Amino acid sequence: MLCPHGLSGEDAPAPTGALPARALSAPPGTGVVNPFAPQGPSALGRPPAPPSRAEAMCPRPESGSAPPSLLAPGTERDPYPLYRTLRERHPLVYDEPFGAWLVSRYADVRAALADPRLVVPPPGRTLAHLEGGTHSAHRALVSPAFRGAALAALTAGVERTAYVLARRLDARQEADLVAEFCHWLPTAAAVAALGLPYEDTARVHAWCRTGLDHLGGHHPELDAFLRPYIARRRAHPGVDLLSALCTARADGHPLPDEAVSGLAGTLLGAGGEATAHALASFLANLLDHPGQLGMIRARPALTAGAWAESLRRDPPLHVVSRRAVEPIGAIPAGATVACLLGAAGRDPARFADPDRYDAFRADPGDLAYGCGRHFCPGALLARLTAEHGLHALLTALPDLRWVPGFRPAPQGLISRSPRTLLVRPR
Image (cartoon, rainbow, N blue to C red):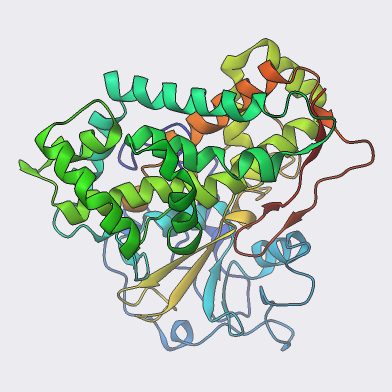
């Protein structure tokens, strides 16, 4: 789901506007104490007290009816009424049909994402799975790889790819930005950033769709494909991001090939489906607000804030799962915790008028691509993809607008975005 400003979890700003402990506690009658509610400056940093008998029980709704569920009819079409109910009445609740504990308020979701007692469920080889060197490996990727010549190469690759795709639409009377732009730009940009052959973009894209996401993952075919490139970069490093990974050091030692391959997969996953969904929502929000789009056209420096706001309002992943490695209040060890980014981003206790898209919102938050030890290192790549993608579209297609009568319709429960964006390029 990205610190949109490219900050590591250790460097990311602390959340503002946190709710008071009383507001974050579970409503009376549920029998559950919310373990993510602030209880003091170091509440999450120390082991939890043994849960009481009441805390160890699954939550019971006040009325005696079944708790709300993500699998309820109509939720996929419009999840926001359910999110509102969860935030107001069930900030921590066990969703039996979905098989997970739901956390829905902004402060609680942010705390859960950063809690070391909640880990990324296997399978997956992400920064959280690099035993003994999580934060060092994180810095080894984020710090050296996104600077200097490597950053210049990344930016040039993203920019060049975006212009190629945008110019292909120039002569069209009508186009679908999802199928012809959003679908391809993130993967092609990640391939260019890693210094992989452009002609392999299509099959790398297929792997991203079948085995990777913004948290990385394991894909045997991708591993086999990357192996000879890793060997070459170790022997003869260049200025691309794969070279930066191959030459980075964690705790004084080079990253092993498995870590390099896993982190490359994380970047490709971030540059794949998740960013494609985020880019589609970003373009939809701006095309829905032509006045704001016009201001960004005149002042491109505003694009980063507009991107962050879109991630708040319409994150590419609405549900991010974690697994409890020890009991946390009412949550037993081994349980799945579903962090509802889609609900947290529209929490009225954290954001004024949260359903409104405001490209100039002063503080849109930073949850969509993770925080803490699970921060996604593809955050900067995704932001650059969005910024240069938008700039390329506005430059190549200055009259870009919706096809008359078209309205974007977001779809999906776990990942959510418009599946079609019909536009008039000229």
